Length: 274
Image 1 (cartoon, helix red, strand yellow):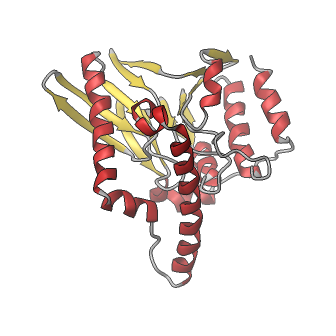
Image 2: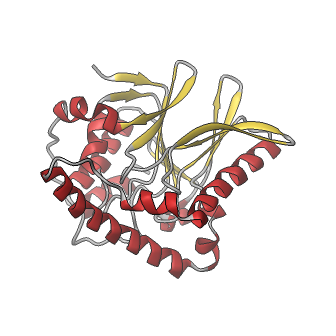
């Protein structure tokens, strides 16, 4: 039985990279029946894109989303830094798919301001090559972490996240995350938004932030590399969904998808929806 959702927000999938958990994302998408899907940036990792590495499961995610849009489910694709090449097409509509760089979601007289969040990242705005190098290094770290976790699983030990350990132990990284969240919230408060929803920093979050000018709810959808998380809105309430808490059930019910398209044919089908 699929769960009915009013809105689901997913970000930082990074299709086309080794760390992307495309199969898990596909299992999650097959388990829900959303009225609206918001993809909040870095869905396809154009920075690290190579035709030599784009597995079928990654193509299946794109194909499944396209099928949902063809069935009438509106999809909002908000561009991020890793898929910034798409920003030259904003704002455009491809059938039921809207491509944009920010989105206002109105629910029950409340407004959520949704954008990826890389605008707050100085390394991207001023030294893009440093940011790209960091993205490459992160992908390599995930590959090393994958091998470590395979060994840990073999010996019956719990999985371990190298990147999470680094983020939590390096004061500068912790400060960056805190500054990111507070900056987003303060801008939302100044503009009288009830919610601000970001991606980018791969840190799932849902909390109220107060300032001298008021308060708002800050949310982050996390990622589909390590946290495997999404934001869900149903019955007038926001919550964070963690795939690992439902992994056994979702993977057991994963449906096989027949897929006979090449990457070029899939891109062509997207453009033809215009």
